[in-house]
Each structure stands twice: as C-alpha cells, then as structure tokens.
Length: 150
Image (cartoon, rainbow, N blue to C red; front, side, top):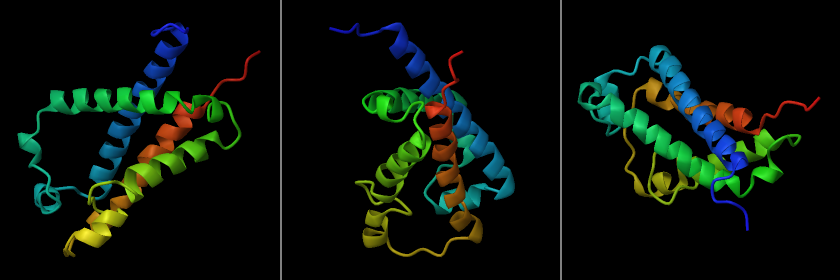
C-alpha cells in the first residue's frame, strides 16, 4: 500500500497548488487591466463589489481549489505529465468539465445556454471568455511540464 503522503504526492500537490494560484492571479491581473473590470460590470454578472471581498478568503479559496484539482489530476497524472500533448489533454478535460459541461447553469456552459435568461452584457464580459480559457491552459502547461532528466 502506498503512503498517504509520499514525497511524490507532496511534490505533485505543491506543484498543482502553485500552478493554480499563480496562473489564477496572473490571468486575473492581466484581464482586469485589459478588460477594465469595474464594479458595475462585475455586479451585472452577479459578483460582489470588489471592496466587499476579503483578500484572505480569495487566497485561501484558490489554495483549496488547487488541492481539489490536485486530487482530481492525481488519478490521471501518469497519462498527462511528461507526455507529448499531455497539456492539451488536461486543458481539454478542464474546459469540457469545468466550463462547457458544468452541472449548474453557469455563463458559457450548455446548462447556462438552456436555463439562463439572455442578458445584455458589455463587450468586455463577452471577451472575458479568453481569461476563462487562458488560465486553465497556462495551468495545464505548468502541471504537465517535466524537466528532462540528465
């Protein structure tokens, strides 16, 4: 029986958590500047105003998401890490399950197209799909990248 917390698992989970947190904040900073996310835009999409959000809860929330991603990806890691196009496989899984085919009616998902009433949103809301697609792409590349052993 393998150890619950082996060095390999700890390294993998640390890598997944770091990759998620870094790419999440990097994409958030870039796209909030590019697309000018202001409170009225965010509230239109159902978000709280930025001054109501606790920064510590954002960081802790992303660490928890990184841990959950680590658990899910651990089971498929051998088919994606260090493999040719492994990043594409992981990215496709994340986009299909996490964005397009969510079980709840989220914007941009199949359920959202069926159940959400059409809302007129500013053009930067439509462009935010690039942020939603780029972050898991960068995350997938970071998680699947392995240095060549000398």
